[in-house]
Amino acid sequence: MTALALALLLPWVVGVVLLLADGRRKLVGWAAVAGLLANLGALIWLAVRVLPDGEQTIVTGGWTDGVGIVLRADALGVVFALLSSLVVLAALVHEVLEGVRSRTFPALVVLLATGLTGLFLTGDVFNFYVFFELAMIAAYVLTAYGDDRHQLGAALIFAVVNLVGSFLFLIAVAATYHVTGTLEMSEVAARMADVEPNAAILIAVTFFVAFGTKLGLFPFHFWLPAVYAGTRPAVAAILSGALANIGAYGLLRFGAGLLPNELELGSTVLIVIGSSSVIYGALLAVSRRDPAEMLAYSAIGQAGYVLVALGVGGPIGLAAAVLYAILNALSKALLFLSGALRGALVAAAFAVGALSLAGMPPAAGFLGKLQLFRTGVEEGSVALIVLLFCGGALSFVYAFQLYQHEFWRGDRVAVGTDSEKGVPAEPSGVAVRAVSVVLALLVLGLGIWPEPLLSLSADAAAVLHGGAVR
Amino acid sequence: MSVLTEAIARLLLAPALMVAGAILVKGYVDVGDGFSAAVIVTLAVALQYLVLGARRTEEEIPLLRFAPRAAIAGLLIALASGFFPLLFGDPLFSHEPGPGKRPIHVGRLELMTPVLFDVGVFLLVAGALIALIHHLAEPPELEEEGHPAPAAASPAAPAAREEASR
Image (cartoon, rainbow over all chains, first blue to last red; front, top):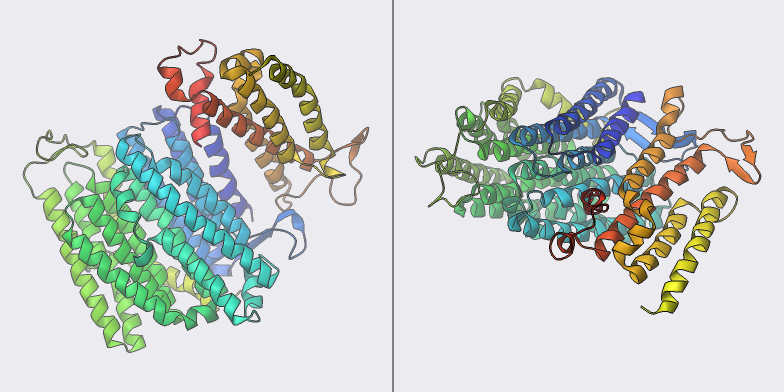
């Protein structure tokens, strides 16, 4: 219980206090890093307690069930919270080492981490929304970080589209409360079976559109390339590596956890949308030359894989969806962070990320693809396996096209300057590069010793299909 | 703005503050809470800004420059009153004195931690809204260009700007 409360309280207080300080000073940046480290520590402590024993629940104020707000840490939530916290930490350390340019950057990053931790560890639909907004509001401001025209444009698009997404989500929450009379997730799941099918389908579709918008799935993807290409690398890493987890987690928790019947009913639609996302994202990524834009399109494709796995469902499909979401977040963060750097070892770190994205064996991304193939085989669907193969092949093409374009061309130029007249880039500082290298080693390590990750994702998926102690 | 509006704006401030205070403290026996109290205060302050302009208002009520800090302090107070039971091993957001126990009375005012929480909410909402109004009344671009900002206002201004963007 203490770990759960501390994981929320520590980053919250640190973030709020840091708002007073000038974030451009190194000391403040490191204080923010310390806050996130404390958060990560509390989450690890929580994970150690939660993973063997099922889950931990706090009902606020000691009220009876149905009155108090429920905070619940189960395997799925803890895994996603750990992942997001780790990615945010890496991005923050990267930016602090590079030199923070705005007063509020460190505080906002810590508050964003608070929001993410909160929403992954809540057992209440409305509380989910509250933390979700906390994270989103921090993200709106972060997208504008840099105060350049590009960043402001990106922030505008990001804020408008995601406000619509949040609004849809809120409508779906209200509708859920209207038909079930409760906001507590396990109660909602129990009562949803008796709800009139039309209403339930409508709610499920609204949730799907809301999370699809966050995740940037194919028909709702239009905002993603402009935003990822416009923001600074550290922010893009946070958006694609941490914030996009909300979409994946939301689809898993609300789809497979709360609305399993509707998920089953819509599985064909999900697989079709997921497949078109995969193909569309991959084809457009191949055609792009700008690294950030290419990664953005690739993010659309990767989100499609998660959706396909979710659509197939069952223990294997859900575990594959969790695993894929985790690995994708890690490789995306690694690619965004290392793609902006110059100097020795950066290219190697980037190559590890590219391998992971393409699903090649030494890197961890391979596991994700492997699990997806297993899902396809289990389902006995030739179309799915062909799709996975084509998607994988295309991602191999664009990942290494990018690698070649970025790191093999002789005239390296500084990021943000025009490639024709730009000055050759200075090698980045050793410490900044070390962040990417550590992240790359983590991705490699998980690929070489996959067992912990596989069991984690199986545990997390077990929460959804009821395999674990609930 | 005519003399009349100016006079009314000045006259309204004190009663508005009093009403807000009453709404804030009676929240636990009657309708009212920190949020609505803060909105009332902000409305009264907004009227001052509208009538007197940002600079004169902030000269007359120097307290307004602390709005961003008040918001942060309020958030910390609210967090503290929610999370303090952690120290005693009680569930989060338990209140003190607990259900069934008699709170300390000061007249009709009951002292308990939820009141503290609402004071936090009051400070947070009022601080954030006033910081926003400051920016609407005197956007940062204006401060930097044409109008040389008064020396006293400048230290708080960057803090307020950041606060508002939050």
